[in-house]
Image (tube, rainbow over all chains, first blue to last red; front, top):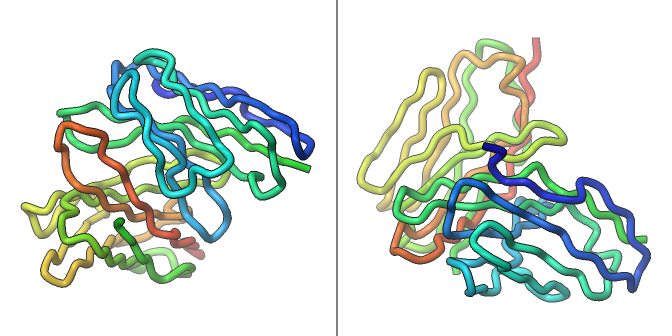
Length: 113
Length: 115
C-alpha cells in the first residue's frame, strides 16, 4: 500500500514548455486534490475531483488543467509554464464517508526558468 | 469561501516549554479542523484533528481546542522536544456532505525548539 504517489519528484522547465504531473492513489479514495505550496502562503487548492469523471476549480486554477483518468489517477497539466508556477505541488486524496482526513503525496518540486 | 488565518508565523521555544498556535476561520459552516506537521522537504502529515461537536481533543503531548462561537481553534504542544521543530498548518473544511471536502489552510507556523 503506497498511499499517494506523485511523479516526477523534481522538474525544471523553460518558460512556455508544457508538462504533466502524475498522481495515483491505491487507497480506493473517491476525492483527489492538487495543491501548490509557496513560501509564506501555505497550501492553496488548484483543482479537485470529488469522484471519477468530475473536476472543479479551487482557489488558484489559472494556468492549469486536470484530468481524472479513473478512480486512482488525477493528473495536473501546465500547458505553457510560467516562472510564477515555480512551486511545490502536492497531490492528495480523501475517502468519502470516512471522515475528512486528507492524505498527501510526497510532493513535486517544479522550477520554471 | 473559507479564509483561515494563523498566528504566529514563527515561534521559538525552549525544550520542555509549551507552544501554542492559534487559527481563526471565517465560514461558520466549517466543522472539521485538522492540524498538519510538515518537516523540511517532506509532505504535510496529519497530527490531530477536531470536529465541531467537541471542544477539546488530546493525544499525548498534543491538544487542540475549538471555540465555534468565536470561530477560532488552537494547537497546544506541551513538553516540547527538538523533534517537534517543523512547520505546522491549521486547516478548516465543511464536513462530509458526500461530496469533496475542500481543506483551506492557514499560512503556517514555523516552530523551533531550542536546547
